[in-house]
Length: 380
Image (cartoon, rainbow, N blue to C red; front, top):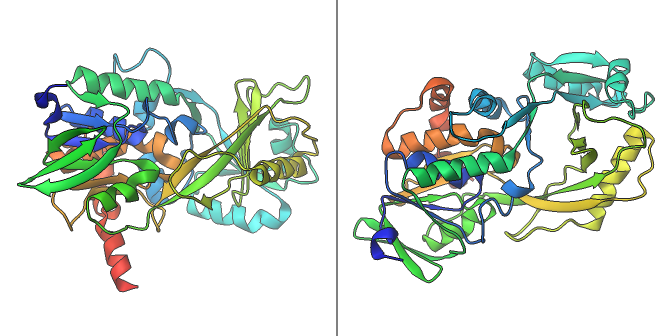
């Protein structure tokens, strides 16, 4: 590796969907190096995502930023990918009678959602027990996402624009000297005036290496499992099914049914594994809602989703130290929000303004800045 290849304008740490998409955008204006500790991109959270575009999921700011990405995901730029990134699938936020109030709260926050009764829910998803479900809110804008195709599209774009990707390069030190960052990774030294911390569950570790205090970003473990559908039941057109209190959710996936207990267990950064209790919880809640008996789990896995204390994205320069940029806290929205957050990152670092639907993300740059978390920590 030549020394020239290790000197750049921007170093992006982390090759999950956030880091890869940002690196691709930034490389249109600058020389960019992308560092990843694993052997390939998307190894942790991005590669374990449920891969669903949930237009009605999360706080209003999350929904608005997600909405900025819909056109891109439905119709990506020519040459970005050879496969469809978006496959339409609606979503039902369902609830029992004792959850009617919660359904009302969700609809009040998002009036575009249409209420449907228990009969409609059971017609759409015949395994649902009519004695369990009260009704649901119908979101027609959702869709399954091809996460790997999206990741590889950004990676190809990054390389075409002259970016350098270094897998198996775990960052071991960061030092700010003479107006540049010196980053040691994989036994090599890299330098740039700007570092983008897109390390997913490891973002706080990277911050510590830079000598910065915590922003309170916490990895939370999320579990999923796959089962076969009942014999003779066609699940292909089922919606994504989300409990009103998000105690569990399920959806069809490649001829099977994916179930998650929607667990959020605090965790250290690690290669997350599914715990038996969480798998059992997912099975129990699905059985309660459907009356089915699950006798065999075909596959189980877990991933770490990272959240800021206010559960809103963190995107912007840290005011405490020059040239240190946060791209973190994407939680369960990282894949669907990545195109917009990448455009915002490009603007905040290089000054290139977003175009088209992505212009709308500009309205939230102050809301996403890490400053808000610093001010919160100082007041408590």
